[in-house]
Image (cartoon, rainbow, N blue to C red; front, side, top):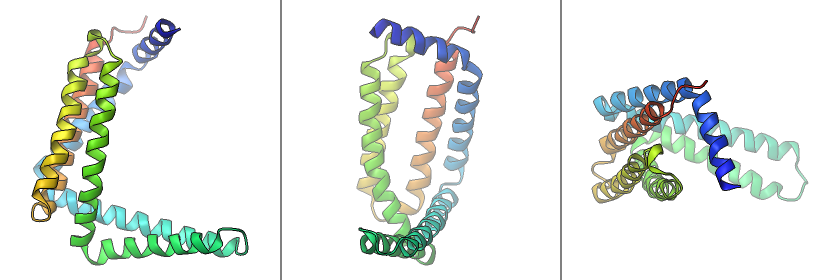
Length: 184
C-alpha cells in the first residue's frame, strides 16, 4: 500500500514538473524582492492583513445580523466586531499590527519547521531529503531570530525573514524539479 502511494505521488510530480518549477521561481523571486526591501514588505503585509481583517469583520457582522436569532448570533457578532477592530488597528497603528504579525510569524515558523521535519522523515534521498531538513531547520532558526529581536527589529525583520524563507522554499521547489525525470 505504502509503495503504491509513493509510486502514484512520484508519477503526479513528474507530470507537474513545469508547475513545480514555475512555483519555485515565483517563490524565489518573491524572496529576493522581500530581502531587498524588507521594510516595504513588512508594511505591505500589515496593510494587506488590515484590509483582509476589515473585510472579514464586515462580512461576519453582516452575516450575524442576517441570521440574527440563530444560536451563536452574539458570539458571531462579537467575533466580527473584534476582527473589524483588529483590522482598523493594523491600518491606523501599523506598529501594533507589525508586532502582532511578527508574533504570529514566530508561531508559524516553528510549526513550519516541525512539519518540514515530519515531511523529511517520509522522504528518501532521491527526493532531496537534505533540502527539506535544511529548510525545516531554517524555519526554526528564523523563529528564534524573530523572537530575540522583538520589538525593535520587527519593522524590518518580518520582511527580511519572510523573504529568506520564501527564497529557500523556492530553492526547495526548484531542487524537486531538477530531481524529477521528465514525464513519458
